[in-house]
Image (cartoon, rainbow, N blue to C red; front, side):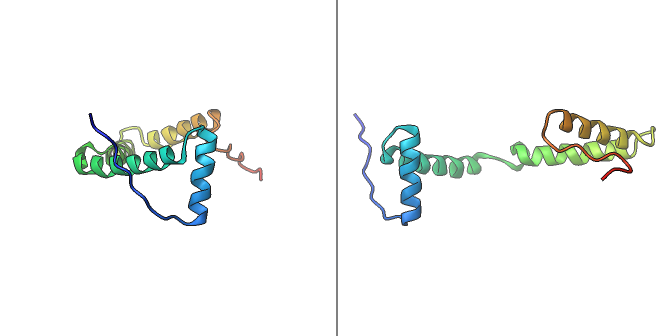
Length: 107
């Protein structure tokens, strides 16, 4: 049977208050909050070692965006890129992710 190892550290009063508030909000002990924070940091650190640049979702999204922009810019329909950007803006507005742009002549 494995047993967890007890570690001890000192933190600033600000961090201690944040940990206590998180524990109270989640209705768990401060030890669990601290352990979860350490586990999350460990997981992020070990996952970055496993990711190759090609499998990193952020890099993939950037590549897709650049490639799509290039395809739209050089498409046979000259204003296809502008139409796509306008449709994207309308969708963001409809979903409430951005504020609507003022119409021309309005401020």
